Image (cartoon, rainbow, N blue to C red; front, side, top):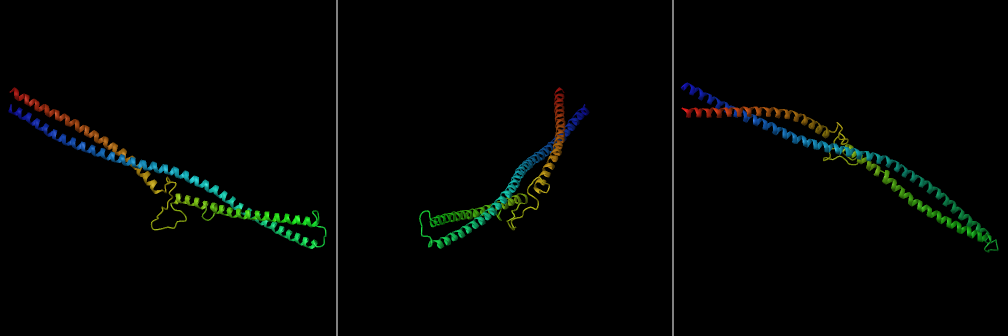
Length: 276
């Protein structure tokens, strides 16, 4: 009978030791599962950040390329308008020269009318309304009026010429709109305007800023590579978590079974003791 009691106690002691080991194994498996879950959650948060950054960069690139297209179309249109403005300046210069010739001829004509009038004034006794002197007087008045009109036209052309020169300068001059558009294009594609000298605080990238999805763009390439690596890491971490969860569930089931067996053994022993 004592041997039987010893055997029961040994069985209970062994169950207790198994319960302790199972509890340790369960706690360790649970800790491993929590660690894997924490690593997975952390990587997910980092993946979300990278995804948002990549989406932002992609959208920025889309808008930037639209902007570049608009700049290019504007540049081409401005080249045409600037060329037309230059042609208009040249045309007005030619017109000014032609009007100046007309004015010179009119000045000569005025002089000839005066000479003629002076020569015959003292030789013609009749100076009525229909006389040659009256006709010459009317001609002189008409020439003076024409000369005044020509001078007004010439002044207007000169004013127009200066305005056209300003317009051409604003459009296609040294610092005109065409230059500014080219500068904006260069700023977007190279990170630096052509009229800005380098300084100690300015270190524009050698690679183009746009298009940003170009392999030469370090930031986009690195971000995209990091995001892809993170997605692969998420798969591995999820597999590791699933494996850890299985181990934890197995350890938990074993722990529960041993705890139940230990409790049943203690109950059986207590019952056997009472019956004695």
